[in-house]
Length: 279
Image (cartoon, rainbow, N blue to C red; front, side, top):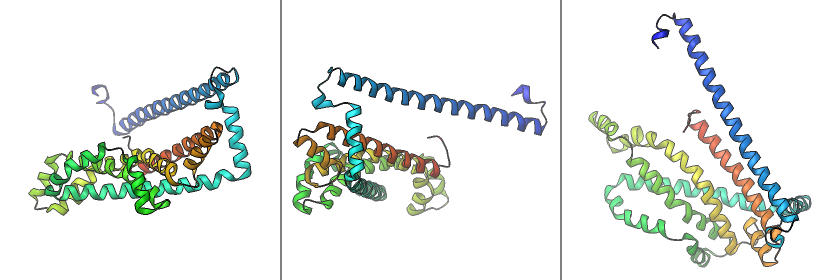
C-alpha cells in the first residue's frame, strides 16, 4: 500500500477497480475449470459404464448400461408415463422440504426462547436424531393411512430434527458480546432475537435448506417404497419386483437430475438472499 500513497483519488479508484477485475476474472476462471472437470468426470464415468456393460465386465442384468437406460428414459418420456410419476414425487418432496424446514426452525426458536424447555428437550433431540426414522414409516402408515400424509410425515421426521439442531446451534453460536450490547440498551428477549440472534443466524438457516433438499428426497423415496402406487420410488420398487433393473437405474438418474436442479434452485435463492456473498 505504501507504493499507492502517492496516488490521487481517481488513480486510487482505478487501481482498486483493476484489482477487483483481476479477482473476478480469477474466480470465473476457477468456476469454469471446476465445471469442465465435473462434466469431464461425468462423461468418463458414463463411457466407462457403457464399455463395461457392452464388454460384459459387469452384470448388465443388475447394472444395465447408459445407452439402454437412456433408451428406457426416451421410451417413458415419449409415452408420457414418466411425467405423472415425476410430478407426484416432486410435489411430495417440495411439501416435505418446506414443512420440515419451517417446523424445525420454529422448534429451534421455541427452544432458544425457553432455557427450561431447552434443558428438557436436549436429550430427546439427541436420542431422536440417532434413531433410524425409516423405522417410523410403518407407524405413520397405521396412523395416517397408506398415502400422501404418511409419505409427508416420513419426510418431516427425517428433516425436522436436523433442521432444529442446526438452527438451534447457530442461535447459540452468535457472539454473546452482540447480545450484551443490545441488552445494555434495554432490549428485551424478543428484541434480542429479532435484532441480533435471527439476523446473525440467517446464513446458517439458509444453508440448512441445501441439506434439507437431500433429506427430503430420501424421506419421500422411502415413503414411496412403503406405500405409494405412483412416483419415482414406486417405479424403483416395481422395477425391482419384475427384475427390470434398467427401469430402476433410469428412475435413479431422473431423481439425481431433478434433485440437482432443486439443489441449484435453493443455492440460487441462497445467493439472492445473501446478496451474492460467498458462504
